[in-house]
Length: 268
Length: 352
Image 1 (cartoon, helix red, strand yellow):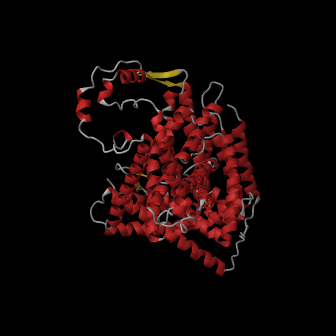
Image 2: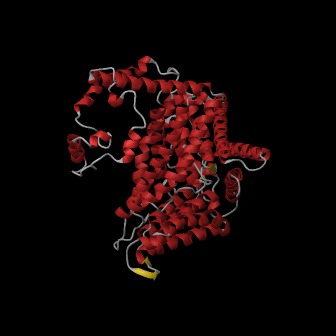
Image 3: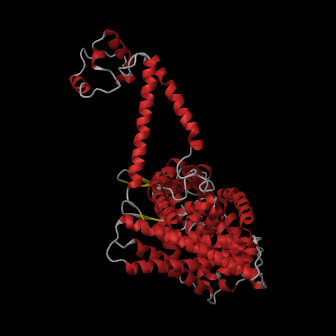
Protein backbone atom coordinates (compact mmCIF):
# COMPACT_ATOMS: atom_id res chain seq x y z
CA UNK A 1 0.00 0.00 0.00
CA UNK A 2 1.29 3.44 -0.86
CA UNK A 3 2.26 5.37 2.23
CA UNK A 4 0.44 8.45 3.38
CA UNK A 5 3.46 10.64 2.54
CA UNK A 6 3.31 9.50 -1.09
CA UNK A 7 -0.44 10.01 -1.21
CA UNK A 8 -0.19 13.49 0.25
CA UNK A 9 2.59 14.30 -2.21
CA UNK A 10 0.39 13.02 -5.04
CA UNK A 11 -2.53 15.24 -3.91
CA UNK A 12 -0.29 18.29 -3.69
CA UNK A 13 1.31 17.58 -7.07
CA UNK A 14 -2.09 17.03 -8.71
CA UNK A 15 -3.29 20.45 -7.51
CA UNK A 16 -0.09 22.02 -8.75
CA UNK A 17 -0.36 20.30 -12.14
CA UNK A 18 -4.01 21.32 -12.52
CA UNK A 19 -3.19 24.96 -11.81
CA UNK A 20 -0.27 24.95 -14.27
CA UNK A 21 -2.42 23.38 -17.00
CA UNK A 22 -5.25 25.84 -16.33
CA UNK A 23 -2.85 28.74 -16.81
CA UNK A 24 -1.55 27.17 -20.01
CA UNK A 25 -5.09 26.67 -21.42
CA UNK A 26 -6.06 30.21 -20.40
CA UNK A 27 -3.20 31.51 -22.56
CA UNK A 28 -4.35 29.71 -25.74
CA UNK A 29 -6.05 31.52 -28.61
CA UNK A 30 -9.55 30.09 -28.24
CA UNK A 31 -13.04 31.56 -28.48
CA UNK A 32 -13.73 31.90 -24.74
CA UNK A 33 -10.18 33.08 -24.04
CA UNK A 34 -10.79 36.16 -26.22
CA UNK A 35 -13.91 37.37 -24.40
CA UNK A 36 -13.86 40.16 -21.81
CA UNK A 37 -13.63 38.24 -18.50
CA UNK A 38 -16.55 40.21 -17.02
CA UNK A 39 -18.85 39.05 -19.82
CA UNK A 40 -17.51 35.54 -19.56
CA UNK A 41 -17.99 35.36 -15.78
CA UNK A 42 -21.56 36.70 -16.10
CA UNK A 43 -22.45 34.44 -19.02
CA UNK A 44 -20.96 31.23 -17.61
CA UNK A 45 -22.39 31.89 -14.10
CA UNK A 46 -25.79 32.26 -15.73
CA UNK A 47 -25.29 28.90 -17.45
CA UNK A 48 -24.19 27.26 -14.17
CA UNK A 49 -27.37 28.54 -12.50
CA UNK A 50 -29.44 27.36 -15.46
CA UNK A 51 -27.84 23.90 -15.25
CA UNK A 52 -28.50 23.74 -11.51
CA UNK A 53 -32.10 24.88 -11.90
CA UNK A 54 -33.18 23.01 -15.08
CA UNK A 55 -35.95 20.48 -14.48
CA UNK A 56 -35.80 18.37 -17.64
CA UNK A 57 -33.25 15.87 -18.88
CA UNK A 58 -33.50 17.24 -22.43
CA UNK A 59 -32.62 20.72 -21.14
CA UNK A 60 -29.60 19.34 -19.29
CA UNK A 61 -28.55 17.45 -22.43
CA UNK A 62 -28.81 20.63 -24.52
CA UNK A 63 -26.78 22.59 -21.97
CA UNK A 64 -24.14 19.85 -21.81
CA UNK A 65 -23.89 19.86 -25.62
CA UNK A 66 -23.40 23.65 -25.44
CA UNK A 67 -20.58 23.14 -22.92
CA UNK A 68 -18.92 20.63 -25.28
CA UNK A 69 -19.13 23.03 -28.20
CA UNK A 70 -17.73 25.89 -26.10
CA UNK A 71 -14.86 23.65 -24.94
CA UNK A 72 -14.11 22.70 -28.53
CA UNK A 73 -14.16 26.33 -29.69
CA UNK A 74 -11.78 27.19 -26.85
CA UNK A 75 -9.30 24.47 -27.87
CA UNK A 76 -9.81 22.52 -24.66
CA UNK A 77 -9.31 18.80 -25.12
CA UNK A 78 -12.33 16.77 -24.07
CA UNK A 79 -10.04 14.04 -22.76
CA UNK A 80 -8.52 16.49 -20.27
CA UNK A 81 -11.95 17.70 -19.18
CA UNK A 82 -13.03 14.08 -18.81
CA UNK A 83 -10.05 13.36 -16.55
CA UNK A 84 -10.35 16.52 -14.44
CA UNK A 85 -14.10 17.06 -14.31
CA UNK A 86 -16.36 14.34 -15.72
CA UNK A 87 -14.70 11.29 -14.17
CA UNK A 88 -14.49 12.66 -10.58
CA UNK A 89 -18.04 14.06 -10.75
CA UNK A 90 -19.37 10.80 -12.22
CA UNK A 91 -17.61 8.77 -9.54
CA UNK A 92 -18.85 10.96 -6.68
CA UNK A 93 -22.35 11.69 -7.92
CA UNK A 94 -22.79 8.23 -9.42
CA UNK A 95 -22.03 6.63 -6.07
CA UNK A 96 -24.61 8.85 -4.43
CA UNK A 97 -27.19 8.47 -7.19
CA UNK A 98 -26.97 4.69 -7.57
CA UNK A 99 -29.12 3.72 -4.56
CA UNK A 100 -31.80 6.19 -5.71
CA UNK A 101 -32.52 3.80 -8.60
CA UNK A 102 -34.10 1.32 -6.20
CA UNK A 103 -34.89 3.47 -3.17
CA UNK A 104 -37.14 5.98 -4.94
CA UNK A 105 -40.71 4.66 -4.89
CA UNK A 106 -42.59 4.43 -8.19
CA UNK A 107 -43.40 2.28 -11.21
CA UNK A 108 -40.82 -0.52 -11.63
CA UNK A 109 -39.17 -0.63 -15.06
CA UNK A 110 -36.77 -3.50 -14.42
CA UNK A 111 -36.77 -6.14 -11.68
CA UNK A 112 -34.07 -8.65 -10.85
CA UNK A 113 -33.76 -10.87 -7.78
CA UNK A 114 -36.31 -8.97 -5.76
CA UNK A 115 -34.75 -5.57 -6.50
CA UNK A 116 -36.72 -3.24 -8.78
CA UNK A 117 -35.42 -0.19 -10.63
CA UNK A 118 -38.14 2.43 -10.60
CA UNK A 119 -38.91 5.03 -13.28
CA UNK A 120 -38.75 7.99 -10.82
CA UNK A 121 -35.49 6.52 -9.44
CA UNK A 122 -33.94 6.38 -12.91
CA UNK A 123 -35.12 9.92 -13.64
CA UNK A 124 -33.80 11.26 -10.31
CA UNK A 125 -30.38 9.60 -10.71
CA UNK A 126 -30.04 10.74 -14.33
CA UNK A 127 -31.05 14.30 -13.46
CA UNK A 128 -28.62 14.45 -10.55
CA UNK A 129 -25.69 13.22 -12.62
CA UNK A 130 -26.57 15.36 -15.65
CA UNK A 131 -27.02 18.49 -13.56
CA UNK A 132 -23.78 17.98 -11.61
CA UNK A 133 -21.75 17.19 -14.77
CA UNK A 134 -23.13 20.14 -16.75
CA UNK A 135 -22.67 22.71 -13.96
CA UNK A 136 -19.14 21.42 -13.23
CA UNK A 137 -18.24 21.64 -16.94
CA UNK A 138 -19.35 25.28 -17.18
CA UNK A 139 -17.38 26.10 -13.99
CA UNK A 140 -14.31 24.38 -15.44
CA UNK A 141 -14.70 26.31 -18.73
CA UNK A 142 -14.49 29.57 -16.81
CA UNK A 143 -11.33 28.61 -14.91
CA UNK A 144 -9.62 26.88 -17.83
CA UNK A 145 -10.08 29.83 -20.18
CA UNK A 146 -9.44 32.74 -17.81
CA UNK A 147 -6.33 33.55 -15.80
CA UNK A 148 -7.29 33.56 -12.10
CA UNK A 149 -6.36 37.25 -11.51
CA UNK A 150 -8.76 38.17 -14.32
CA UNK A 151 -11.57 36.12 -12.80
CA UNK A 152 -11.05 38.06 -9.57
CA UNK A 153 -10.90 41.42 -11.35
CA UNK A 154 -14.11 40.51 -13.14
CA UNK A 155 -15.77 39.92 -9.75
CA UNK A 156 -15.26 43.61 -8.99
CA UNK A 157 -17.66 44.41 -11.84
CA UNK A 158 -20.35 42.64 -9.78
CA UNK A 159 -19.64 44.84 -6.74
CA UNK A 160 -17.78 42.11 -4.90
CA UNK A 161 -15.98 43.97 -2.02
CA UNK A 162 -12.43 44.98 -2.98
CA UNK A 163 -11.03 43.55 0.24
CA UNK A 164 -12.54 40.14 -0.57
CA UNK A 165 -11.15 40.21 -4.09
CA UNK A 166 -7.71 41.15 -2.72
CA UNK A 167 -7.83 38.32 -0.17
CA UNK A 168 -8.92 35.80 -2.84
CA UNK A 169 -6.06 36.92 -5.09
CA UNK A 170 -3.45 36.73 -2.35
CA UNK A 171 -4.78 33.41 -1.10
CA UNK A 172 -4.41 31.92 -4.55
CA UNK A 173 -0.81 33.14 -4.78
CA UNK A 174 0.12 31.90 -1.31
CA UNK A 175 -1.51 28.54 -1.93
CA UNK A 176 1.40 27.82 -4.26
CA UNK A 177 4.00 29.18 -1.85
CA UNK A 178 2.65 26.99 0.97
CA UNK A 179 2.11 24.10 -1.45
CA UNK A 180 5.78 24.21 -2.32
CA UNK A 181 6.75 24.36 1.35
CA UNK A 182 4.54 21.34 2.06
CA UNK A 183 5.99 19.46 -0.91
CA UNK A 184 9.53 20.17 0.30
CA UNK A 185 8.66 19.09 3.83
CA UNK A 186 7.12 15.79 2.74
CA UNK A 187 9.83 15.06 0.18
CA UNK A 188 12.61 15.69 2.68
CA UNK A 189 10.84 13.53 5.26
CA UNK A 190 10.35 10.79 2.66
CA UNK A 191 14.03 10.88 1.75
CA UNK A 192 14.99 10.43 5.42
CA UNK A 193 12.50 7.63 6.11
CA UNK A 194 13.72 4.06 5.81
CA UNK A 195 11.11 1.31 5.97
CA UNK A 196 7.49 1.64 7.03
CA UNK A 197 6.37 3.92 9.85
CA UNK A 198 4.14 2.62 12.62
CA UNK A 199 0.57 4.03 12.49
CA UNK A 200 0.93 6.23 15.63
CA UNK A 201 4.22 7.55 14.23
CA UNK A 202 2.52 8.36 10.91
CA UNK A 203 -0.24 10.27 12.72
CA UNK A 204 2.32 12.20 14.77
CA UNK A 205 4.21 13.03 11.59
CA UNK A 206 1.09 14.29 9.78
CA UNK A 207 0.02 16.41 12.77
CA UNK A 208 3.53 17.81 13.21
CA UNK A 209 3.70 18.63 9.48
CA UNK A 210 0.40 20.52 9.77
CA UNK A 211 1.69 22.30 12.88
CA UNK A 212 4.99 23.29 11.27
CA UNK A 213 3.14 24.49 8.18
CA UNK A 214 0.80 26.52 10.39
CA UNK A 215 3.61 28.30 12.19
CA UNK A 216 5.45 28.88 8.89
CA UNK A 217 2.24 30.30 7.38
CA UNK A 218 1.73 32.70 10.27
CA UNK A 219 5.37 33.76 10.05
CA UNK A 220 4.85 34.32 6.32
CA UNK A 221 1.72 36.36 6.97
CA UNK A 222 3.72 38.61 9.33
CA UNK A 223 6.47 39.04 6.74
CA UNK A 224 3.94 39.81 3.99
CA UNK A 225 2.24 42.34 6.24
CA UNK A 226 5.53 44.12 6.92
CA UNK A 227 6.39 44.09 3.20
CA UNK A 228 2.96 45.55 2.38
CA UNK A 229 3.31 48.24 5.05
CA UNK A 230 6.75 49.19 3.79
CA UNK A 231 5.16 49.77 0.37
CA UNK A 232 2.54 52.09 1.80
CA UNK A 233 -0.33 49.68 2.59
CA UNK A 234 -2.55 51.09 5.35
CA UNK A 235 -5.49 48.71 5.15
CA UNK A 236 -7.34 50.16 2.16
CA UNK A 237 -7.46 47.98 -0.96
CA UNK A 238 -7.39 49.47 -4.46
CA UNK A 239 -7.64 47.35 -7.59
CA UNK A 240 -7.11 48.38 -11.19
CA UNK A 241 -10.18 47.71 -13.30
CA UNK A 242 -8.69 48.00 -16.76
CA UNK A 243 -10.89 45.72 -18.89
CA UNK A 244 -12.28 47.08 -22.13
CA UNK A 245 -15.32 45.45 -23.67
CA UNK A 246 -15.99 45.31 -27.43
CA UNK A 247 -19.20 44.76 -29.32
CA UNK A 248 -18.24 41.11 -29.77
CA UNK A 249 -18.01 40.65 -26.00
CA UNK A 250 -21.54 41.99 -25.57
CA UNK A 251 -22.69 39.59 -28.30
CA UNK A 252 -21.13 36.68 -26.42
CA UNK A 253 -22.78 37.79 -23.17
CA UNK A 254 -26.11 38.10 -24.96
CA UNK A 255 -25.69 34.64 -26.47
CA UNK A 256 -24.69 32.89 -23.21
CA UNK A 257 -27.33 34.70 -21.13
CA UNK A 258 -29.94 33.99 -23.81
CA UNK A 259 -29.06 30.28 -23.70
CA UNK A 260 -29.36 30.29 -19.91
CA UNK A 261 -32.73 32.04 -20.05
CA UNK A 262 -33.97 29.64 -22.73
CA UNK A 263 -32.86 26.66 -20.62
CA UNK A 264 -34.78 27.99 -17.64
CA UNK A 265 -38.02 28.66 -19.52
CA UNK A 266 -37.93 25.93 -22.11
CA UNK A 267 -40.23 22.97 -21.45
CA UNK A 268 -39.69 20.08 -23.87
CA UNK B 1 -19.20 17.23 2.59
CA UNK B 2 -18.50 19.69 -0.23
CA UNK B 3 -21.97 19.85 -1.80
CA UNK B 4 -21.65 20.08 -5.62
CA UNK B 5 -23.92 22.04 -7.97
CA UNK B 6 -27.25 20.43 -8.66
CA UNK B 7 -27.78 18.76 -5.28
CA UNK B 8 -29.59 21.71 -3.72
CA UNK B 9 -32.40 23.66 -5.35
CA UNK B 10 -31.63 27.28 -6.37
CA UNK B 11 -34.04 28.43 -3.64
CA UNK B 12 -32.10 26.47 -0.99
CA UNK B 13 -28.81 27.82 -2.31
CA UNK B 14 -30.14 31.39 -2.18
CA UNK B 15 -31.44 30.87 1.36
CA UNK B 16 -28.07 29.54 2.52
CA UNK B 17 -26.20 32.41 0.84
CA UNK B 18 -28.56 34.75 2.70
CA UNK B 19 -27.99 32.82 5.92
CA UNK B 20 -24.22 33.03 5.56
CA UNK B 21 -24.11 36.73 4.57
CA UNK B 22 -24.66 38.24 8.06
CA UNK B 23 -21.97 35.99 9.51
CA UNK B 24 -19.50 37.00 6.79
CA UNK B 25 -20.34 40.68 7.32
CA UNK B 26 -19.99 40.50 11.11
CA UNK B 27 -16.80 38.44 10.83
CA UNK B 28 -15.20 40.91 8.43
CA UNK B 29 -16.12 43.90 10.61
CA UNK B 30 -14.80 42.21 13.77
CA UNK B 31 -11.60 41.01 12.16
CA UNK B 32 -10.90 44.41 10.58
CA UNK B 33 -11.45 46.09 13.96
CA UNK B 34 -8.99 43.72 15.64
CA UNK B 35 -6.39 43.25 12.94
CA UNK B 36 -6.51 46.55 11.01
CA UNK B 37 -4.03 46.33 8.14
CA UNK B 38 -3.06 42.75 9.11
CA UNK B 39 -6.48 41.46 7.99
CA UNK B 40 -5.64 40.94 4.32
CA UNK B 41 -2.28 39.12 4.69
CA UNK B 42 -3.38 37.10 7.73
CA UNK B 43 -6.61 35.85 6.18
CA UNK B 44 -4.97 35.21 2.80
CA UNK B 45 -2.10 33.16 4.16
CA UNK B 46 -4.25 31.30 6.67
CA UNK B 47 -6.83 30.48 3.98
CA UNK B 48 -3.99 29.17 1.81
CA UNK B 49 -2.78 27.06 4.75
CA UNK B 50 -6.30 25.67 5.32
CA UNK B 51 -6.54 24.82 1.63
CA UNK B 52 -3.28 22.84 1.76
CA UNK B 53 -4.17 21.07 5.02
CA UNK B 54 -7.42 19.90 3.39
CA UNK B 55 -5.23 17.97 0.93
CA UNK B 56 -3.28 16.11 3.62
CA UNK B 57 -3.88 12.39 3.61
CA UNK B 58 -4.21 11.71 7.33
CA UNK B 59 -3.45 8.19 8.59
CA UNK B 60 -6.29 7.12 10.88
CA UNK B 61 -6.62 4.34 13.47
CA UNK B 62 -7.71 1.18 11.66
CA UNK B 63 -5.37 1.60 8.70
CA UNK B 64 -7.52 3.94 6.61
CA UNK B 65 -6.77 7.55 5.65
CA UNK B 66 -8.96 10.64 5.51
CA UNK B 67 -8.98 14.36 4.81
CA UNK B 68 -9.68 17.02 7.41
CA UNK B 69 -11.13 20.50 6.99
CA UNK B 70 -8.90 21.96 9.72
CA UNK B 71 -11.73 24.14 10.97
CA UNK B 72 -11.01 23.47 14.65
CA UNK B 73 -7.32 24.37 14.21
CA UNK B 74 -8.38 27.64 12.54
CA UNK B 75 -10.92 28.43 15.27
CA UNK B 76 -8.43 27.66 18.07
CA UNK B 77 -5.56 29.68 16.60
CA UNK B 78 -7.45 32.59 14.98
CA UNK B 79 -10.72 32.69 16.94
CA UNK B 80 -14.16 32.00 15.46
CA UNK B 81 -14.62 35.10 13.30
CA UNK B 82 -11.29 35.03 11.49
CA UNK B 83 -11.73 31.27 11.13
CA UNK B 84 -15.12 31.80 9.42
CA UNK B 85 -13.46 34.06 6.87
CA UNK B 86 -10.32 31.98 6.32
CA UNK B 87 -12.21 28.71 5.82
CA UNK B 88 -14.81 30.46 3.61
CA UNK B 89 -12.06 31.85 1.38
CA UNK B 90 -10.45 28.40 1.10
CA UNK B 91 -13.85 26.90 0.18
CA UNK B 92 -14.52 29.62 -2.42
CA UNK B 93 -11.19 28.91 -4.13
CA UNK B 94 -11.83 25.17 -3.95
CA UNK B 95 -15.19 25.67 -5.67
CA UNK B 96 -14.21 28.31 -8.20
CA UNK B 97 -10.81 27.09 -9.21
CA UNK B 98 -10.61 23.40 -8.36
CA UNK B 99 -14.28 22.48 -8.81
CA UNK B 100 -14.49 20.92 -5.33
CA UNK B 101 -18.00 21.91 -4.28
CA UNK B 102 -20.42 23.77 -6.50
CA UNK B 103 -20.50 27.47 -7.30
CA UNK B 104 -24.20 27.69 -6.53
CA UNK B 105 -23.56 25.74 -3.30
CA UNK B 106 -20.75 28.00 -2.02
CA UNK B 107 -23.18 29.61 0.44
CA UNK B 108 -24.29 26.20 1.72
CA UNK B 109 -20.76 24.82 2.02
CA UNK B 110 -19.50 27.95 3.77
CA UNK B 111 -22.50 27.93 6.08
CA UNK B 112 -21.98 24.29 7.05
CA UNK B 113 -18.21 24.08 7.29
CA UNK B 114 -16.92 27.61 7.84
CA UNK B 115 -19.71 29.12 9.96
CA UNK B 116 -21.27 26.20 11.85
CA UNK B 117 -17.91 24.43 12.04
CA UNK B 118 -15.96 27.43 13.36
CA UNK B 119 -18.56 28.45 15.93
CA UNK B 120 -19.05 24.87 17.14
CA UNK B 121 -15.32 24.19 17.32
CA UNK B 122 -14.65 27.40 19.22
CA UNK B 123 -17.54 26.80 21.65
CA UNK B 124 -16.59 23.20 22.38
CA UNK B 125 -12.90 24.08 22.76
CA UNK B 126 -13.54 26.97 25.16
CA UNK B 127 -15.96 24.95 27.30
CA UNK B 128 -13.84 21.78 27.33
CA UNK B 129 -10.51 23.56 27.87
CA UNK B 130 -11.89 25.86 30.58
CA UNK B 131 -9.10 27.69 32.38
CA UNK B 132 -6.56 24.92 31.87
CA UNK B 133 -2.96 26.08 31.35
CA UNK B 134 -1.77 26.39 27.74
CA UNK B 135 0.44 23.32 27.96
CA UNK B 136 -2.10 21.06 29.66
CA UNK B 137 -3.28 17.74 28.26
CA UNK B 138 -6.83 18.96 28.76
CA UNK B 139 -6.37 21.43 25.89
CA UNK B 140 -5.32 18.62 23.54
CA UNK B 141 -8.43 16.64 24.51
CA UNK B 142 -10.54 19.79 24.13
CA UNK B 143 -9.12 20.35 20.63
CA UNK B 144 -9.87 16.72 19.71
CA UNK B 145 -13.46 17.11 20.95
CA UNK B 146 -13.77 20.45 19.11
CA UNK B 147 -12.58 18.92 15.83
CA UNK B 148 -14.78 15.84 16.13
CA UNK B 149 -17.92 17.71 17.21
CA UNK B 150 -17.55 20.55 14.72
CA UNK B 151 -17.13 18.33 11.66
CA UNK B 152 -20.06 16.17 12.71
CA UNK B 153 -22.29 19.16 13.35
CA UNK B 154 -21.34 20.53 9.93
CA UNK B 155 -22.14 17.15 8.38
CA UNK B 156 -25.49 17.09 10.17
CA UNK B 157 -26.37 20.51 8.73
CA UNK B 158 -25.37 19.32 5.24
CA UNK B 159 -27.41 16.13 5.68
CA UNK B 160 -30.49 18.08 6.76
CA UNK B 161 -30.15 20.45 3.79
CA UNK B 162 -29.84 17.50 1.39
CA UNK B 163 -32.57 15.52 3.14
CA UNK B 164 -35.06 18.39 2.88
CA UNK B 165 -34.74 18.56 -0.92
CA UNK B 166 -37.07 15.67 -1.89
CA UNK B 167 -39.59 16.92 0.66
CA UNK B 168 -39.65 20.45 -0.76
CA UNK B 169 -38.77 20.00 -4.44
CA UNK B 170 -40.32 17.23 -6.51
CA UNK B 171 -42.18 17.02 -9.79
CA UNK B 172 -45.86 16.20 -10.34
CA UNK B 173 -45.15 12.45 -10.16
CA UNK B 174 -43.34 12.87 -6.84
CA UNK B 175 -39.86 12.20 -8.27
CA UNK B 176 -37.22 14.30 -6.45
CA UNK B 177 -35.78 17.16 -8.53
CA UNK B 178 -32.52 17.57 -6.62
CA UNK B 179 -30.80 15.43 -3.92
CA UNK B 180 -32.99 12.31 -3.99
CA UNK B 181 -32.85 10.99 -0.42
CA UNK B 182 -35.19 11.98 2.41
CA UNK B 183 -33.94 12.88 5.89
CA UNK B 184 -34.25 9.31 7.18
CA UNK B 185 -31.66 8.20 4.59
CA UNK B 186 -29.59 11.38 4.16
CA UNK B 187 -28.81 11.82 7.88
CA UNK B 188 -27.52 8.28 8.60
CA UNK B 189 -25.73 8.07 5.23
CA UNK B 190 -23.87 11.31 5.90
CA UNK B 191 -23.30 10.77 9.61
CA UNK B 192 -21.90 7.23 9.40
CA UNK B 193 -18.94 8.45 7.34
CA UNK B 194 -18.41 11.52 9.48
CA UNK B 195 -18.81 9.87 12.87
CA UNK B 196 -16.11 7.41 11.82
CA UNK B 197 -13.56 8.43 9.18
CA UNK B 198 -14.01 12.18 8.64
CA UNK B 199 -14.58 12.84 12.35
CA UNK B 200 -11.49 10.82 13.21
CA UNK B 201 -9.42 12.77 10.64
CA UNK B 202 -10.54 16.06 12.15
CA UNK B 203 -9.88 14.73 15.66
CA UNK B 204 -6.36 13.59 14.73
CA UNK B 205 -5.38 16.85 13.03
CA UNK B 206 -6.91 19.10 15.73
CA UNK B 207 -5.40 17.25 18.68
CA UNK B 208 -2.09 16.69 16.89
CA UNK B 209 -1.62 20.32 15.85
CA UNK B 210 -2.55 21.64 19.32
CA UNK B 211 -0.15 19.14 20.95
CA UNK B 212 2.56 20.25 18.53
CA UNK B 213 1.91 23.95 19.17
CA UNK B 214 2.03 23.39 22.94
CA UNK B 215 5.60 22.18 22.53
CA UNK B 216 6.76 24.42 19.67
CA UNK B 217 4.75 27.67 19.79
CA UNK B 218 2.36 27.91 22.74
CA UNK B 219 1.85 31.62 22.07
CA UNK B 220 -0.33 30.69 19.08
CA UNK B 221 -2.79 29.07 21.49
CA UNK B 222 -2.97 32.08 23.79
CA UNK B 223 -5.42 34.05 21.63
CA UNK B 224 -8.36 31.78 22.44
CA UNK B 225 -7.28 31.03 26.02
CA UNK B 226 -7.61 34.39 27.80
CA UNK B 227 -8.01 32.77 31.22
CA UNK B 228 -5.13 30.33 30.85
CA UNK B 229 -2.36 32.77 31.77
CA UNK B 230 -3.95 33.84 35.01
CA UNK B 231 -5.12 30.37 35.95
CA UNK B 232 -2.64 28.68 38.29
CA UNK B 233 -1.41 25.21 37.45
CA UNK B 234 -3.11 23.74 40.51
CA UNK B 235 -6.69 24.73 41.29
CA UNK B 236 -6.80 27.44 43.95
CA UNK B 237 -9.03 27.43 47.04
CA UNK B 238 -11.07 30.31 45.59
CA UNK B 239 -11.81 28.47 42.34
CA UNK B 240 -12.85 25.24 44.01
CA UNK B 241 -14.47 26.71 47.14
CA UNK B 242 -18.09 26.15 45.94
CA UNK B 243 -17.29 22.50 45.25
CA UNK B 244 -15.80 21.95 48.70
CA UNK B 245 -18.79 23.64 50.36
CA UNK B 246 -21.20 21.47 48.34
CA UNK B 247 -19.22 18.36 49.32
CA UNK B 248 -19.36 19.30 53.03
CA UNK B 249 -23.11 19.90 52.78
CA UNK B 250 -23.61 16.50 51.17
CA UNK B 251 -21.60 14.83 53.94
CA UNK B 252 -23.79 16.46 56.61
CA UNK B 253 -26.92 15.37 54.76
CA UNK B 254 -25.86 11.73 54.41
CA UNK B 255 -27.88 10.58 57.50
CA UNK B 256 -31.00 11.24 55.38
CA UNK B 257 -30.30 7.79 53.95
CA UNK B 258 -31.48 6.30 57.24
CA UNK B 259 -35.02 7.55 56.48
CA UNK B 260 -35.32 5.02 53.66
CA UNK B 261 -36.74 1.79 55.06
CA UNK B 262 -35.31 -1.64 54.17
CA UNK B 263 -32.38 -2.53 51.90
CA UNK B 264 -31.76 -1.29 48.39
CA UNK B 265 -32.96 -3.79 45.74
CA UNK B 266 -30.31 -6.43 45.09
CA UNK B 267 -28.24 -5.50 48.18
CA UNK B 268 -29.82 -8.00 50.55
CA UNK B 269 -27.80 -9.71 53.29
CA UNK B 270 -28.19 -13.56 53.65
CA UNK B 271 -30.05 -13.18 56.97
CA UNK B 272 -32.72 -10.99 55.29
CA UNK B 273 -33.94 -14.07 53.39
CA UNK B 274 -34.88 -15.62 56.77
CA UNK B 275 -36.65 -12.68 58.46
CA UNK B 276 -40.39 -12.58 57.59
CA UNK B 277 -40.50 -8.75 57.52
CA UNK B 278 -37.50 -8.55 55.20
CA UNK B 279 -38.94 -11.27 52.92
CA UNK B 280 -42.15 -9.25 52.56
CA UNK B 281 -40.11 -6.17 51.60
CA UNK B 282 -38.02 -8.14 49.06
CA UNK B 283 -41.17 -9.59 47.48
CA UNK B 284 -42.87 -6.17 47.33
CA UNK B 285 -39.82 -4.64 45.62
CA UNK B 286 -39.51 -7.58 43.18
CA UNK B 287 -42.93 -7.51 41.57
CA UNK B 288 -44.46 -9.75 44.30
CA UNK B 289 -42.15 -12.59 43.41
CA UNK B 290 -41.42 -14.61 46.54
CA UNK B 291 -37.69 -14.80 47.36
CA UNK B 292 -36.11 -18.25 47.93
CA UNK B 293 -36.67 -19.76 51.39
CA UNK B 294 -32.96 -19.56 52.20
CA UNK B 295 -30.24 -17.29 50.86
CA UNK B 296 -28.55 -18.77 47.73
CA UNK B 297 -25.42 -20.80 48.55
CA UNK B 298 -23.13 -18.58 46.47
CA UNK B 299 -24.43 -15.44 48.18
CA UNK B 300 -23.83 -16.97 51.64
CA UNK B 301 -20.32 -18.05 50.71
CA UNK B 302 -19.28 -14.73 49.17
CA UNK B 303 -20.93 -12.66 51.92
CA UNK B 304 -18.65 -14.29 54.47
CA UNK B 305 -15.57 -13.65 52.32
CA UNK B 306 -15.02 -10.04 53.40
CA UNK B 307 -16.22 -8.07 56.41
CA UNK B 308 -16.03 -4.31 55.97
CA UNK B 309 -14.49 -2.23 58.76
CA UNK B 310 -17.61 -0.04 58.83
CA UNK B 311 -20.46 -2.39 57.85
CA UNK B 312 -23.68 -0.63 56.77
CA UNK B 313 -21.99 2.77 57.29
CA UNK B 314 -22.18 2.16 61.06
CA UNK B 315 -18.80 2.03 62.79
CA UNK B 316 -19.09 -0.48 65.69
CA UNK B 317 -17.69 2.02 68.20
CA UNK B 318 -20.51 4.57 67.63
CA UNK B 319 -24.01 4.32 69.10
CA UNK B 320 -25.59 7.07 66.94
CA UNK B 321 -26.54 5.86 63.43
CA UNK B 322 -26.64 9.45 62.07
CA UNK B 323 -23.16 10.22 63.35
CA UNK B 324 -21.96 6.89 61.90
CA UNK B 325 -23.32 7.82 58.46
CA UNK B 326 -21.63 11.24 58.51
CA UNK B 327 -18.35 9.76 59.74
CA UNK B 328 -18.47 7.11 57.00
CA UNK B 329 -19.02 9.83 54.38
CA UNK B 330 -16.01 11.78 55.68
CA UNK B 331 -13.81 8.68 55.78
CA UNK B 332 -14.85 7.64 52.24
CA UNK B 333 -14.29 11.12 50.79
CA UNK B 334 -10.94 11.38 52.53
CA UNK B 335 -9.83 8.02 51.12
CA UNK B 336 -10.81 9.05 47.58
CA UNK B 337 -8.91 12.36 47.85
CA UNK B 338 -5.91 10.49 49.28
CA UNK B 339 -5.98 8.03 46.35
CA UNK B 340 -6.07 10.92 43.83
CA UNK B 341 -3.19 12.71 45.56
CA UNK B 342 -1.20 9.48 45.56
CA UNK B 343 -1.90 8.91 41.84
CA UNK B 344 -0.92 12.53 41.06
CA UNK B 345 2.30 12.13 43.05
CA UNK B 346 3.16 8.87 41.23
CA UNK B 347 2.38 10.28 37.75
CA UNK B 348 4.36 13.47 38.54
CA UNK B 349 7.45 11.41 39.40
CA UNK B 350 7.31 9.39 36.20
CA UNK B 351 10.12 10.36 33.86
CA UNK B 352 9.24 12.10 30.53
